[in-house]
Length: 239
Length: 390
Image (cartoon, rainbow over all chains, first blue to last red; front, side):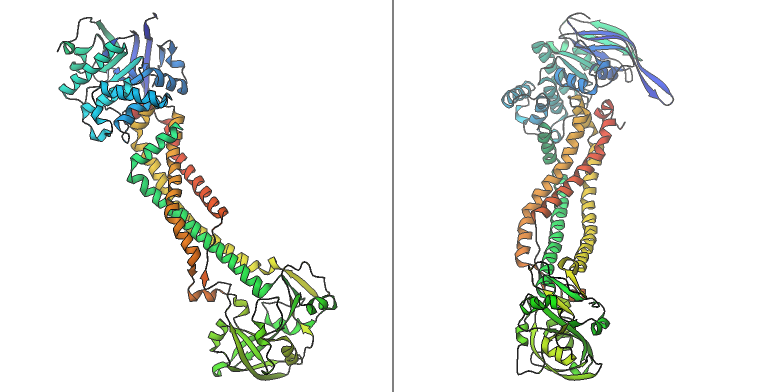
């Protein structure tokens, strides 16, 4: 694992029990992600993208192999240690936004900072900045049910970014969005990546997302079939 | 502190769902306190009245005397023993002589018990001074129930027939000189209070008594052969047992009410965990441990109990305070209970009662809040995030 690598995956295998046997979701995965990458795991449904993200995010454990995040092997973490790792170093963006329904936009974005026990003044500044960065200052007191899909996903982006995590894991972030909102969200994330140097790892089969990625890891039937890097500016950015 | 803040947010955010269960639970608090306060008030008032008017500081019974068997009255009298005579003479004890008798009010026959008591006694809070009339052959004091049942009124003359110590039947007219208002049926129903000396003469039992009532706070009385000391508690045993039975039967009511409220909270918790599994998955993804999520959900359930106590206090405190002042008018039918019940019952709410009720309800709420949350420990966060049941 190089110094600049923040995620290192070696010979990862993930099996799920199905009936009397097992279904192998991931097999022989060897990958590393460096700081500041804007990478995506792409592939058809059932190819293992979400499973890979869940293991990187310490929400799941490998059946075989090692996954090291920020120098810590995920497979050896206790529930509490894994929760601590996610709390401090990860931001999550989900396909279905997963905002806390009874909280306002402000409270949703504030939530990760409450878990970090950040002082109130500092917390308030960070929340307002994050909400401003996604352009939702006028919706501070709105609840998720009062937001459009695009707005809800922007809140999710603000929530993922508010604590300045090293890694943001975005699982099909644009799947429920129209083209305009999808581009807006991806644009926002690309800007945050460029500005803060946060590592973004996407899972997607959406062409709109793929256009923005600087690194595309193609998965098929749980195996990496291609790992392409692209240093040129993305079409979205140009536009 | 964080969990408390989050739990409060979740409760407030849940809106009507929270308030419905809180209101139902608050009813449990108020009704339990009200009913138990009513029983405590009854117990306190009943004991007070019985001690003041019937039991005194205890009684000394002739060894053959059985208050539940009138047939023993004939054989359970004796001269006041020498060991106790001084105390009786000093007014520390009131001698009572009993006899079965028959009256004929409204041309109907009715069995009664004649109770002879010194008119000048002050051991029992009875209007016996009314018996100190020289110009009336047999002055009698009766209770309101007795007067009502027999159709007797003040100054009425009623024929009384009795059998003296030799078994000879005798009769005379007794005059109702006072109708007393008492909450103690044992000194009212079927009882004619007459002057002790007059009854002794009627029964030809000079200087005799069936029982002696001890004044309150006089300490232990000397023992006397052939007489048995009955302390206050043993004389109140039946009443205490009845209150206890009432209390147990009331607990069935509390249990039903509490069960309804707890069922509502249990349902909310079970439903929350099912409905909010995506939220649970999100909380775990954002860095909460499963244990912390369990504590959060348990705390949310417990806060229903706290909110219910506050809501219950808002309407319960004025309601119960008002009830304590105006009391609770008992229906006439309660006379048939045969125990001391005032016409107006004043509930008593002790700090112990309120504290115990809050503790019991909170304890029960905590248990039903916690039980469903154990399921969270088995929830697969990756499934939960997507709203799947694992």
